[in-house]
Amino acid sequence: MGRVLVVNSGSSSVKYRLLEGDERLASGTVERIGEPGSPVPDHEAALKLIGAELAGRGLGIDSPELTAVGHRVVHGGVTFTEPTLITDDVVGKIEELIPLAPLHNPAGLAGIEAVRRLRPDLPQVAVFDTAFHATIPPAAAAYAIDREVAERWRIRRYGFHGTSHAYVSREATRLAGTPSAGVIVLHLGNGASASAVSGGRCVDTSMGMTPLEGLVMGTRSGDVDPGAILYLARTAGMSPDEIDTLLNRRSGLLGLCGDNDMRAVQERLAAGDPAAELAMSVYCHRLRKYVGAYYAVLGSVDVIAFTGGVGENSAPVRERTLTGLERLGIVLDPERNARGERTISADGSPVRVAVIPTDEELEIAHQTLEVVARHR
Image (cartoon, rainbow, N blue to C red; front, side, top):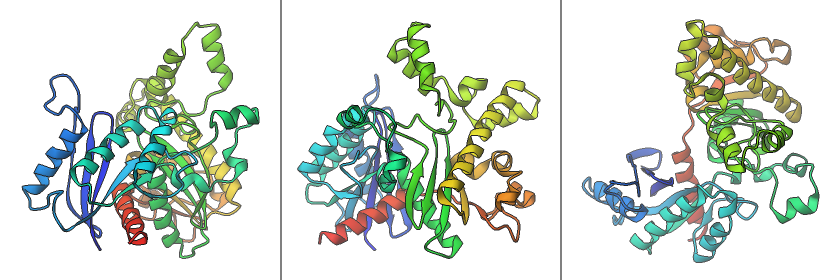
């Protein structure tokens, strides 16, 4: 099957998992990279720490059993629509996309360059968060703004969480038992996104040019009238940076009730907190709207799949989102939902509702091996 090291480089952390087939051999995280007082000054030092830890277990980066390294890269724009073998040219093109993901792509590149220096002989593959959504049609991808402006500044819907949506939608298609299945994936964590998938191809997704659009999230607003942003700039005198902070870091569940963790929101809700009730209501109302919209986009739905920390663990969110949609063929089984079983819809429900834990690292490993096999 081949042994693959999966590297997920953030601005101040590197997460890794070593896999052989579907078996996890090792995993971990190096944090506080480059922060004051940290013993880890940069990503290369982090990768060396990871290498030393793996070597101590006989699984080092210099191990001959290591087949390839797969890197998560957040933004591939329209340039990268599938996992790609990393070359100097690919690195240069990822650098060109930094304006579209200024916080994320530089971190991904730092991890790539660090591993390339440590193991220049080893095939490395970039797996892009945006790639799964590259199949959405122009009607879903284009914003209704001046076309020349949009083309010049690369303004369009890209979508994110694509690696998770790819993995979960494929598992949901297997549950449906037909390769032409219509699937709605609800990836709900601190970040949240929905996708409509038909026959294994994404046809719409809730995140847009940035991860800010769409569902209510932990600290992000999701959909907001653009006129409200102009109003804040003109009337409230807020700067672009202040508005950015408001919508990305002080909104969502946090903005509505002061907590960005759904577990805390549910505890406060049980205690009768009205702010928590508002947060939960807005959160689930937005989800419900997207389920309805994507049902219309697909025409028919075989599976609705919940995934991510909230999607996998919050029975109340699943219940509030879908209860009352029986006439659409969506019938929850309350007991199965409360237990968090794999299938939480009732027997005979035309639409199957499932809880499918995501595994982005495993998806990256599989895509990495597929790319390496093609280039042998």
